[in-house]
Image 1 (cartoon, rainbow, N blue to C red):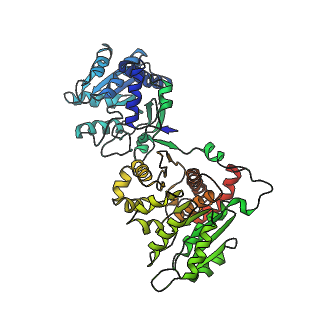
Image 2: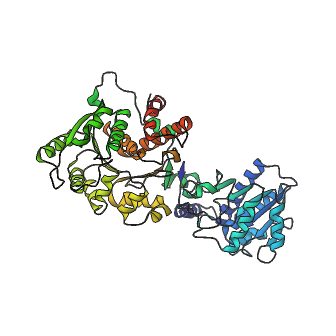
Image 3: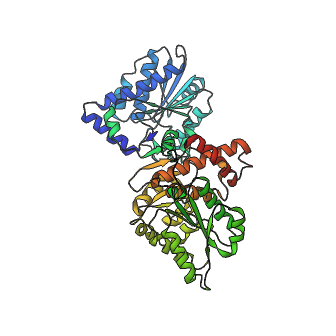
Length: 512
């Protein structure tokens, strides 16, 4: 599914008008689309419908719906939440409702409005549209809560009032809809948290904008779909060998964090890389070797100042030159010399690089290194919100307030594919394409999940998958593996290592 921001919707409306569709017609189409949905969904004759209308054009859509639903035999009450309509279009629509529609003013007739809402069999939310930002006024918030407390189904026009279109942010009282009839195209606020939790079932409806106008618009966001993920995998050649499926180098692990390196390399192996070379400190080699029988190892020795010994530097450079993709950072630690090691690997690699965890922390004070590295090969970063905040020199709250903008802006500015992890992980490409993942669950929120994801991304990249697609496939299948684990073991009891065991079954479905 494709999602479009407020500015894109405004541009589509402008182009529709240039093609001869008036704004009055667009309002009529929108209100009509909502009325038709409600007519299909409910028996209307004799039913009481309360329509909450703001003073803008979203309220005008509500007036159009009021006229049409009255024509279907419903008893319709329009609630003027902010008084008489303020736009010419809304005033025209209000004037055409006809005498059969009852109109009450929330400011002057609160008792009548409360009665209309409590008696309603159906409530329609036309308070605010896609232009809404911030928090609704307190007195409108009271009206919104009245609707939420009703037992009647609530249908929002375009987007639930209180949800910001572009970000999904909710800053105060908000309509909680059972259905949202969204006009022309879905909006990011329908799918981004927390707005997603207020939308109920989102029903896209044609609303007068010509199809060719919609097709010309570049979506702000797309969701990852099963068919697309399946299309990324091809059957293996019967005459192939391990060299055909790439060498993945994982520079990971430190004393006390051997598990992160093991999980990253295990994921790389499970996802089909021909060879996984795990470069890790000599001190934790026995732990890793006892768990990873299929991997090869490059053992790292350090000098007193934290730098690699000359012999180790040569070994690691040779391993990097022979790699088809490289993962840096899982459990790497913050010992002296780590930032210098990460910078050297980033700048000298010729293959796609996946940077995770301590690899990201190592460059967080000088993120311009990412821009320099991305000039010579694809760079994929996989931050959680805390790491993203450090990279952007901001707070976690600011990142989470507009996840879509945070990920897409960082990708554009630094030229790196940005995988912003969390509920609804985002995959943003420097060219503006941004994808959202809908698989996954809270049971995955524990240490180790990110190490597995990094190994999966690196494995797909090593096998020759285009970097954006490698990140997309890994994010989707990682979440789906988590969902299968939750079904089998519960969100409470599942572990990241359990997800590794789900991967072979997923490849039977997606890579046959």
